[in-house]
Amino acid sequence: MPGRARANGEGSIFPYRNGFAAYVWVEKPDGKRGRKWVYDKTREEVHDKWIKLHGQAKAGPVATRSPTVREYAGYWLREIVKPNLAPGSYVTYEVAVRLYLVPGLGRKRLDKLRVSDVQTWINEVRRTCQCCAQGKDERRKAAQRRCCALGRCCQDLPSATSVTHLRTVLRTLLSQAITEGLITRNVASLVKLPAVRKRKRKAWTSDEARRFLESARADDDPLYAA
Image (cartoon, rainbow, N blue to C red):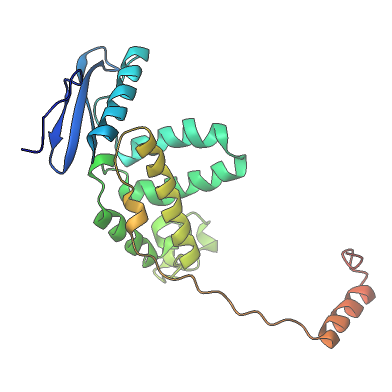
C-alpha cells in the first residue's frame, strides 16, 4: 500500500491505477446531481484539479461525462477559437475540424482517445483522395465533372504540410481539454508524421532577372515599379 489513501481534509482523493483520482458531487446541466471525476499522476496534481472542480461546482452546472471529439470541437471553435483568434485563423481551424477531424474522430470520447486512434486517422487521411472523400467533383455541374464523380480518381492526396497542420489543430484542441481537466495527456503529440521536404529553389542569374524586368517594362506591367 503506497502511503495513506487520503490526506486530512481531502476526503475524495485516492490512489487509482497508475496515479490518483478524485471526485466532487456537482449539479449537472439537466438539474440532477452526479459525481465529476478528475485524474492525474500525482496526488498534488489531482488535488489542484479537485480544488478547481469545487470552484466550478459552486459557480454553476458541470457536465459529468466526457464529451466526444465532435462535441468538444464544436465548443472549442465557438468559445475558445472564435473569440480569441483572427477570423482567418478561425476559418482555417473550422475547415480542418469539419472536413477532417469530425469525419475521422468525431465519435471518439476525449478520455478514450488513444495514440493509435490518431495515428490510424492521420495515415488514412494521407492515403485518401480528398476529391473523393469530400465530393469535390460531385458538387460540380454534371457537364463539368471530370474525375472522381466519373470513376476516374484524381488522387488528390493531402501534402505532408497539410497533414502536419491537421495534427497541429488536434493537438491545440486537446491542449485546451487538458487545461479544462477533461484529459491528462495529449495523444496527438505522440503520433508519427511524414517528413516535410523543403523544395530546392534556384535563384535567377543577373541576366535572367534583367530580361524579366525588361519584359515587364515593355509590357507596361502595373507591378513593374515594385
